[in-house]
Length: 233
Ligand SMILES: *Cc1c(COP(=O)(O)O)cnc(C)c1O
Image 1 (tube, rainbow, N blue to C red):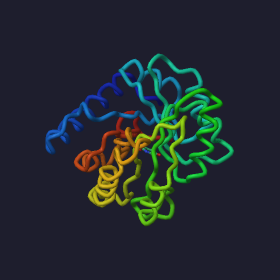
Image 2 (image 1 turned 90 degrees about the horizontal axis):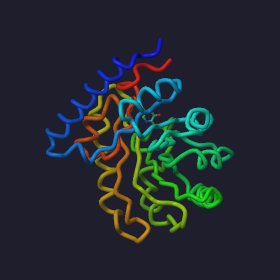
Image 3 (image 1 turned 45 degrees about the vertical axis):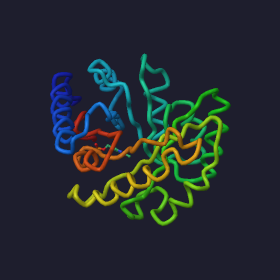
Image 4 (image 1 turned 30 degrees about the vertical axis):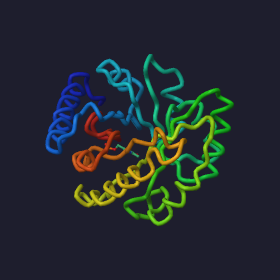
């Protein structure tokens, strides 16, 4: 059963209230925060329903699914690839995506740049950091992220937007706080530190279960699936 438009609207209202309250509690403005609707595993009908409710930023984990659902985009739609991309899918990812949140190798940056040039576009890029230090998660390790950021080359067709991380999956959102704070410090350190970091201001962190902590720690981009679309099958 797909969730109805009314149910989705209720979910959105509840989520917006939660975001407002979290912002108020730490004296932030919710206008600083972009909401990505993570539509993975949900059919195109629900994407259209979300669009009708005002959703413009969508997140997908897998390139193939992104292509199926977002090759033709409605006006103003932006597609964010938020999951790890296999090297043989990079080209397709660049073609469909406006932004990739899961980059964690320098070689990938060079290749993304080439594909972006081929596609005549400038691709927004986030560097994923493995702040949870769980082996199952991808991302640059906390130990090597400084070196990584120092080595990132200036590339014509890439726009470095900021950092991304996934919180710890322990059931307690407080366990993610340290990792989120680490990401914010890193952003503060590198934002504007070089010409190609002049837009490096975004923090893509916070999902359904840990968005309050993420907002308190400075998130500017929330990636929310379950709270909007309901459970995934
Ligand atoms: C699935 C996914 C999300 C959304 O998770 P929810 O808990 O459903 O909000 C966010 N970020 C990434 C990287 C994901 O894979």
